[in-house]
Image 1 (cartoon, rainbow over the protein chains, first blue to last red):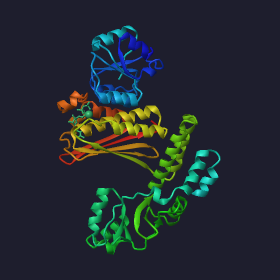
Image 2: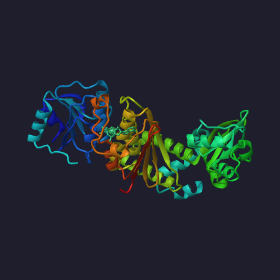
Image 3: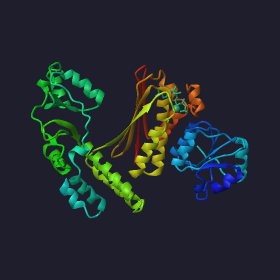
Length: 116
Length: 318
Ligand SMILES: Nc1ncnc2c1ncn2[C@@H]1O[C@H](COP(=O)(O)OP(=O)(O)OP(=O)(O)O)[C@@H](O)[C@H]1O
Ligand SMILES: [Mg+2]
């Protein structure tokens, strides 16, 4: 699924990286607020959905080769997080949906989980 | 060595370029200029501590601004064997020292390394004053730095795919001499503000050197976890990543407080993360577990209050 489609499904606001949305194809999604849980996945996956609004969410995505980061419940990301996402060219967007709703929507659309 | 390079040239224009650099670069450009020096009146036992703390295996002996000798591990061992560890350096140093001048080209310098067989040379200016010190490692580092700058400049012109293996090849050539290349990062403790930059920078550097993506990711994740731990639980520390012939070794050192029960710390889910760390997304108690999983070998030791020492190894073949 194109990241653009995910943004549309989640009615999300793109904070940075709009220019990459059409070029990125994703089929897996992982959800976490604890970054070590994300880092424990043994291979890279598409998109990270998180409630963590600070720079470490983006840092984690960069280190773990995650393609895009979505913040839930309309949280406002820290400025440093946005700057890093821009620098690393990682699309970063915010949805008003809760974590539960966001996951439900994407699951129904066929995104797959990420194994250990 | 210059001859050798000449013979091999032709199959790869990057190597030809490397060869040219040997003539362009001077000793002064690649030497290290913050040199730990000693005074001839210091004792041999003092130099032992100095070598340990600075992780050096030799130092120039300087008196009144002039180089009067060199002191090395060999000299120290000899002093130990002869039970002369408390004599002044003046009596244990080597006084017949081979030097290099900072304006000499690298080609001359390399020839000297091969001809005389020392591992390091003091570097003087033409007035005879000590300016720095040079090792094989400095030469490699200097060449790599220059190669990397030129590589970045040409990357846009020529396809990156064509350049990258050449960089790797250069590395392999270098490794034939059993030389390693170290990246060092200082990590600030008690704040997560910058945590992750070292891991990110290291990952970038290794990527430029042609390390493959799955290995890059494993190294990145393990170093990131280690960096977060330094920033969260210690007064600060240091990460040293060394590229060796067989792979990458990473050492993570801090200066305390240390861990009482190392076995317990290694258990999945065990965490003492304070609230400020948890608010920033850490404290799952999975960091060390991840490090173990990502690395091919891991060694984790700690003592209270001295500090914690983590060693990770990553093999190119895995
Ligand atoms: N360098 C260190 N110095 C002192 N204590 C440490 C150090 N590294 C780890 N620890 C201790 O070991 C525990 C486990 O560390 P580990 O990295 O596995 O998990 P965590 O940091 O608590 O959580 P996570 O890494 O999953 O975010 C830490 O909570 C801390 O008590
Ligand atoms: Mg940790």
